[in-house]
Amino acid sequence: MDILELLSKADSEDELIKVGIEPGEHYDNIAAMFAHATGADMSAIWLVLKGEQLLIGSHNTPSPLPEPPFLHRDLGGKVLYEPISDEKAAVIKYPLINGELASMRSGYYLDITYKKQKVGYVAMAFETRVGEPSPEMVDTLFSLRNLTISVLQGRANARKMLGEMQAVVKR
Amino acid sequence: MTSITLDDMLAVATPQDVLEKIELTNSPVLDQLARSCAKVTKRPHVNIVLYSADEVYTIGSYNPVCMRMKRTLYGPILQKPIVELSDFVLQSTHSDPQTIAQMKSFTMATIKVAGETVGGISVHDYQECSTLTESQKDFLIQAAQLAACVIETKARLKTTLMNAFSLSNF
Image (cartoon, rainbow over all chains, first blue to last red):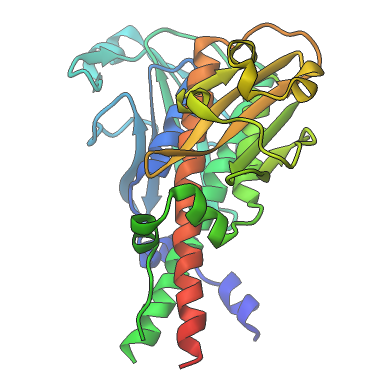
């Protein structure tokens, strides 16, 4: 078995846990870009690794966020539009960066993958019911998702390389 | 044997000079970022560039505009978060009329590393088009901040690698 074959058998979630992906400015910027592109009132990027949730980036909302009700749903690689009923919106209030609590009435959600395995998702929330995204908007969201995955991959690779170098120094 | 970090280099030279010394190359992440900028701003050409003292070099792009190699932008114009075509008219002494004359639409968000402008993300069109909305400008500013994070991370990694190669010869 060669090294590439070996790596391809590694579980993506395990790998990201081992590498130690941390929240950071990169992901806050990406979350803000998702919000500005869609007009969302807030946005967040979550990793869900072995059942553990980690908020790695957010825009217009402080950490920690209440867990959204759709966290473990399989989005099938599509953009999911979810209207939220007034009753539910009245119960689940999201904190905004200015300290106010806001009731969100709809959201867009996308899966994030790492080595083709789902490892988290991006959520954008709106105070109104904005309706299904247009094909053009879906295209933009996929482009931003690819960017998110590229950054995640790049940071994971960087951390792997630095880990390897630290191991050499310790010897 | 001592190793030199990016912070050590930034303490004795300008961010622009340090990045020039490190010689960052094209990045697929920045190409992807350029693609997203094109989609959101609805502009066909996007360049992500770094400035040296007198040159401009592209490190990420989507359907790029052929940039003049010689740097023509200087001065206070680069301190703004967003630079637009109208800024060139106001600052005509700092611009190159030949380059901008062909462009009907131009907006650039400046990329700052260690508080200094080191480059920009520019979106272009040769056709007349409506000005960017505030949301689109905010998007571009965030994209420039992300580019700055990516550039700084790449610079730190490259410095670390350069140290590692020099140490491997011990």
